[in-house]
Length: 201
Image (cartoon, rainbow, N blue to C red; front, side, top):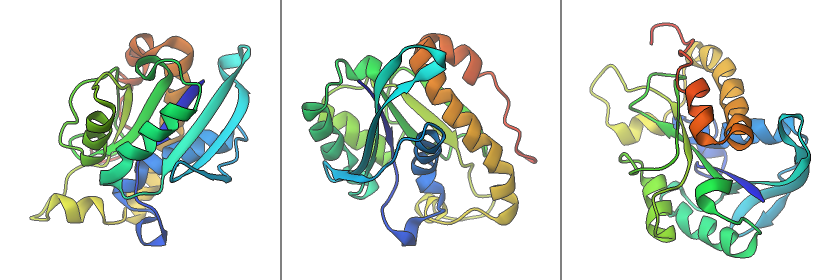
C-alpha cells in the first residue's frame, strides 16, 4: 500500500493558513483521483482506494490527514502504519508539509533527513524512530517584516499569494504521483529542478 500523509491543523480556524499547505496538497491529490476522505480512523481523516498511478496497474492507495494538532501528528501516523499494509515507510510513505525556508510555491522532494525545524515532521521522526521518511516540502516563504515564524505560518495567504500558489498546489499533487511511480530518487530530478512560478519569489 502507498500512503500519503498531509500535515496541518484541524478545524476551520486553520483552513487556508500557510501551515496547512500539506493538507491542501493531499486533498487535491485525493480529489483528482476520486479518492474520498470520508473515514475517521487513527485520529485522522482517511480515504483508501485502488488507483492506477501513472497509467499503470491499480495500487492500493491511502491518504491520511491527522486531526491531532500538527505537533502531535506522529502518533496518528504510527498507528496507521501499524494497521495498514504499508510494507516499508521508507519507500511507500510520502509526507507533505509546508516549509518557510523555501520561496512561495517552490517544491522540494527528499528521501529523508532531519526535520529542518518543522515540528510536525520532527514528531513523525521521533514517533517512528527513523528519519528515512520521504517528504515533499512546499514553500510558503518567510515574512518580509519582523513577524514571528509561528504567527506567520498560522496566518493566511494574501489574495495575490493564493492566486500564485494555485498552480503550485496542482504541481505538488502531480509530484506525489511522480514519487510513487518513478521512485523518489528519479522524481527528485523532475520536481526539484522545476522553478517556482510565483511572482516576486
